[in-house]
Image 1 (cartoon, helix red, strand yellow):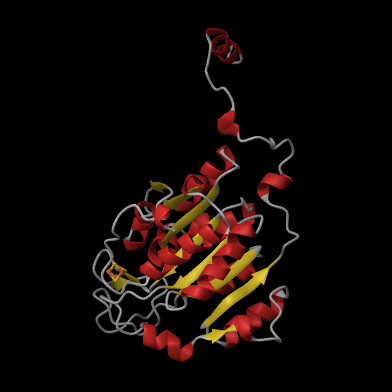
Image 2 (cartoon, rainbow, N blue to C red):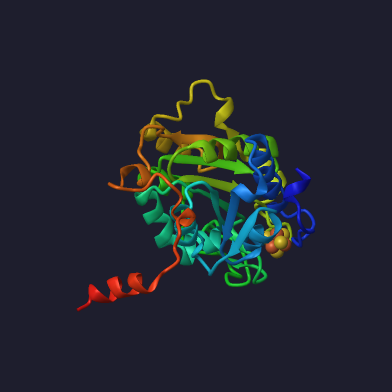
Length: 284
Ligand code: SF4
């Protein structure tokens, strides 16, 4: 476990992102993954620090671009376990297009969103998941826009793995992240990760009082997508657990004709003069 901790995390004391970091590290340790087998690609925001704090390979990409960067890493080296990580502003605002297409494409990466319903790094503006009526620096009289509904969006898009966790329940989150890593294809784990500094509504106490744990419901079937959509909507998205999984959906890598069995980066990419000549010849 200590191998994954390279530096002291700089989030505010009590930030939910500590719980997410802890859960990601524990999940990797439980699966026997060494730090050099794991890459975390992050976007911009407080959650973007995950790529620095995690302790494996880290790549701090551009705002909203963690997913395409993580997909490229995975396609270049299939032997790595690859996370994309970011916040609700990063992923459901500027990065939303990539999220939708990643679910469609189904490259074998795990996407972790630290959803705190606010822009924390820029000191408290309304985000794409802020609830109607949220009073923030950009909405002093309360937001009037409907929030993005991440789980319903992912279920509607037929994402092959959809889960939701809570920073205040690291044990469950570890289990969900382990399952997400093991799922072959794009896995989405949304995490309620309270911003203790700028969001005084969506707090640890709020989630403890309202969350329904579907993992503990013996009647809930995470393989029934239509029922999952209904259950999530009925609970106003305040659920945790494995929401949906289709273990039979082939990944992009499995579906693409001719996709190589080896890690592409392991090949000899040294270009010789005859290689340049061959490439130039194709333009003549
Ligand atoms: Fe966490 Fe909010 Fe502090 Fe950012 S501002 S580190 S999200 S508590």
